[in-house]
Image 1 (cartoon, helix red, strand yellow):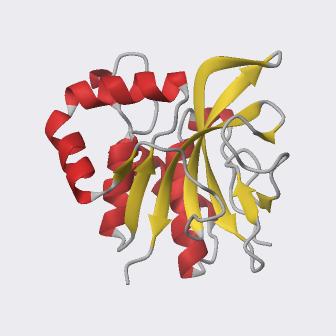
Image 2 (spheres, one colour):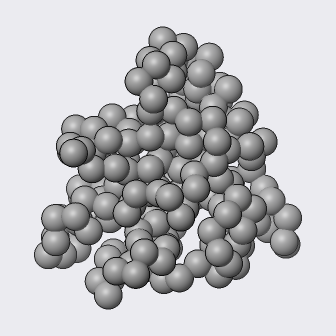
Length: 194
């Protein structure tokens, strides 16, 4: 299995950019060149970060901007919301700031209120996870890339690790992806056109 560059402390909250890059590299068969990869991820993060318009989420990757980036790459992304309170809070703030875009997403079918059904999902999805501290959920999010193996079993490419590994538990909302990280049920499913 391919091992990619990993997200370090100096990369801040760039996990959304890492997952987008991992997806692109997975589908393109990218040969790694670490210095160029890190520069690409940094530029990608600058393009997708919420910024000061999203109080409480300023340094997080904006899922709507991530979806725009995927669409520019030829994919058909769908955001699955799920029921996690932190995700609902983030989406509430996002909806207030981008009412027309959210309405358009609903109209086009690129926003789904339900959590992602991993068994029925496309080959790739960017999962929105919540961090745990001392076993309890905290208000910190982390993106990971889920990809399906040849036998359609989900594997998780966490930017902290840089390689595809089986999740700690079967992927369902609230399940442990790995120690200290649970899946919220929210995801950007990445379907290919056709």
